[in-house]
Length: 178
Image: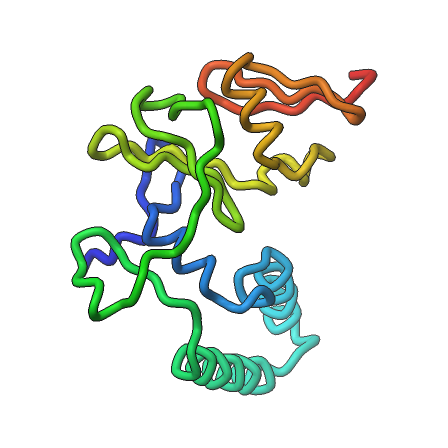
């Protein structure tokens, strides 16, 4: 069964709108990369005999229970394209970034949500999504609406920590002095 939370584009896996909305309604600690890191460390420790697998599984069961309770107790509503809004509530809010069009389809507006910037789909199938924290692992800034506005209008932005630029449909960060 195809759920549609992510799709492959070449060697890259990209979150769909449905995937982005799912991440946005989850509790912050569950959708953070830190949680993935903790699980990877725990699994490594289990494989080397430093941690008990049953203890890890008990933690997963507790987490599953708390996420289920969170979902039942009134988590944020969302609506996916093609679904009846009476079943899911209103769509998750996003605000448009003024003065820029989608760099992929050239028609849709770029909207900002809590975690990402994405196209409002000027053309069917456009999958432009730019995560706000996509540059932070390399020492770059968390992207905001001003950076995105300048980046999509001019192709690059120079800031106090370095330069953010678009090159061959990739976003790059070069720290000052590199």
